[in-house]
Length: 232
Image (cartoon, one colour):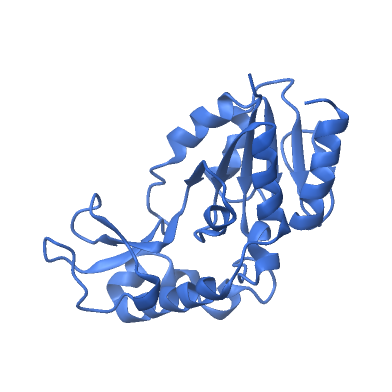
């Protein structure tokens, strides 16, 4: 039986694909205040601004391609039962071919009803914008299918359950400062090896982490060597 390898990915996973990060210096939060474009209150105050912000992000995504890190994780599926838990709203893991991807913070290529959260729609890449007046089947305005600050993270319980079953846990490109995702590390069982891929120093509650201080693509290559060297 294959070992369960669970991978938690953040913005650093997609940075090499040209996807702008949010928190780094010069990132999106430096250009657009969080309160204006990533909160329910911001959407209520100026829905057109918020829709246009995510329309721009969507156009950016449509030009992006998976990088070697994304593709490397797909390659691990030949040896492990791989599940990816991502904080990213892009679909680059799916584009690369990953079979099991759980999105904690929503999906950029989907829209949902402001009046019925169960109504979620795929966005046609050929007509990628959501505009004021675009309505769901019940007549409510559509909004990005994104978890904004102050909103519940509906997939967190499933992510916690997946993490508790991990035989190997890998963290790629996240500061581990964003909760509740950062709290997943607490759900990793004792004696389960934890690998962290990030070129920066990342401070966590665990001291037994194997830190691969490289960007995602090079880091995933190094991870594969370490995993096979250790016969996992």
